[in-house]
Length: 409
Image (cartoon, rainbow, N blue to C red):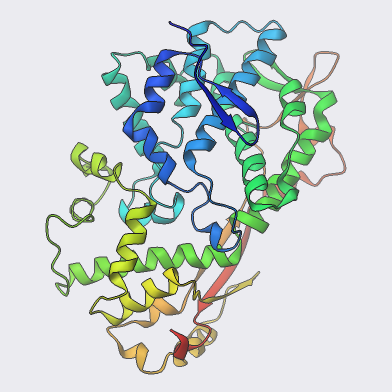
């Protein structure tokens, strides 16, 4: 396994990020990975936080860097991690988001119905493994939690994993929402392994507490911000409207159209390689180009939806702890006037649903604290003054979207 000393990325969060092996560099240089430079990390959040234009590319590199630091800490405490394991752990986290679609989560359900981005990430990892003659076997095992050393998977995907350690700090930095700024170095410094499980030394308890609170606050303030939520739902509605027009033969979809291959597949069972590889060629700019072309479309609904997004004329969105009544929804639809008659247009302009946030999952993957005596406790038993029952119960809120003024559509 050849080591590299000369490839560095300069990152605004951590400074220099080193690429440690040739295989990792080859993966980063592959077109599927380079595409992440053109996928925004936070979907349409830049419509709320103007600085949030960072990409999946820099997040993946950042998470890999945090993994390097975590490995350094554990090795410094006597945890044996071989060079092959070190490389595989970095590859597993580097590729964890490779399956994301344009604008990250926003378009995935509309472009590939019933296919989760993690399924696509696994397919891409398998593709890379074939291309590199089985060199990703170990990374794949760690990613899918089949490797017996559980802490390696927990660092990739767990309560306090390197993915979250990077994105909370990075998203906080680019949005300017300081509540998300966590002490990554302190959390890393308290990591330890006991019985092949990831644990945290008791001295890091307050940094972990801040991490949990930061995650909760970032969800409500940033990730589930009602305006960016309305924009993402609107983007899905726009794509669904186009699909409706095609299915009802109101739109002739030619084979050269960018969405043509995706509209020939129904589920993950029929996700052929050619469809997958086409999907992996799409990025944010393709969606923007579609929206621009649709602002001149013959269909009034598609035209209005596209214009709302491009020119940030977003719908109003109400959030409530209880479901909105049918009467309330119908009242909003009544304000649509003639537009409501336009080929069942009202569900595209007045719609409701739910959002939820769960900070901490209280199960076998729970956050474990290592006391000086060597005993291990779940964090909920150590911190008495935080209500972990409330933390681990999903908070469900209801939303209702409707145009601000119909005449402004």
